[in-house]
Amino acid sequence: MGLVSMDFLLRDAQAENYAVGQFNVNGFEWFEGVLTAAEAEHSPVILGVSDRLVDYLGGFRAIFQTATAYMNRFEVTIPCVLHLDHAHTFERCAEAVDAGFTSVMIDGSHLPFEENVKLTSRVVEYAHAHQVSVEGEVGRVGGVEDGEASEMRNADPDECVEFVSRTGVDALAAALGSVHGFYENPQIDFASLRSIARRVSTPLVLHGGSGISGESLAEAIRSGYSKVNVNTDCLIAWRDAIKCFLEDHPHIYEPYTILHKGSEAIYQVVRLKIQEFGSSRKAEHFLLQKNG
Ligand code: 13P
Image 1 (cartoon, rainbow, N blue to C red):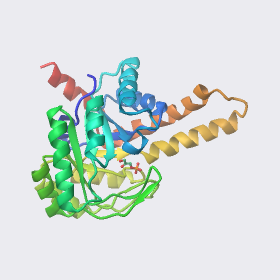
Image 2 (image 1 turned 180 degrees about the vertical axis):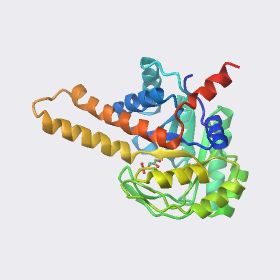
Image 3 (image 1 turned 45 degrees about the vertical axis):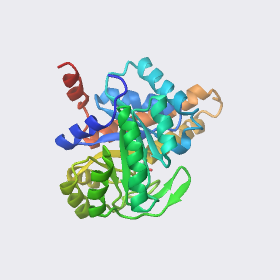
Image 4 (image 1 turned 90 degrees about the vertical axis):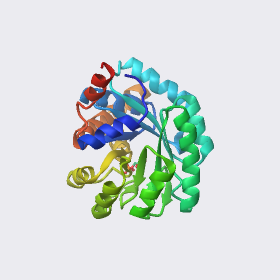
């Protein structure tokens, strides 16, 4: 099906009460692990690229070309989104759109509310003119991401209502207690989540999806989250698989052989997450829509 924008995937997830996974890309092994796992599960998938890693990964254009090359190589048929995660400026979002990304997140959560609305609206205007979806953030996800710490602030339901109606975003990251990085079972404010989901028709996004118990995750999806972001769980699986392989095979030094163990570990995590999110076999919805 190729690269698509995120909005119609999340609308389906919202209507059918499941979540689409965003898996953040940290290197070549992620393209292989994430795409082949999603294909095996027949699930739509979102390849997330944190703005802070864009230069390390070769720039927007190189990332777009790598994603499409891997999709061709593995004959990917599922709907797949190439999404810029946590960009802080209009210019970075525009660069991603111009390079072929099909979705962007503008994170103005560190700004005063009015400035967040202004910045996000500007990105929406540009992105929508190019059929690219936009995610915005209200409140603040806490924890550590790509080595940088941020303070947590829960989203206010009234602000969420006003934010979506004034900006026209396709997805809203409503921070309600989840955290980026390595945290055991953070506490999500389910009452506020349900109240926001009742009042906001825009699909909601759970950042900090690693380390949340299966039970809390199921409740989070039932209560209104239609997209779940995962990075740390894949990073830890990648690190552990490589560490274990090197301990068992101290004489192997070929990167392909070593790093491939990382891909295999990512594949296992992504398949399990997709099953937990309930998005297995949901790719079929979009193939049916496409075929008439
Ligand atoms: P984790 O660090 O919990 O995996 O969260 C990732 C994330 O939310 C990326 O935006």
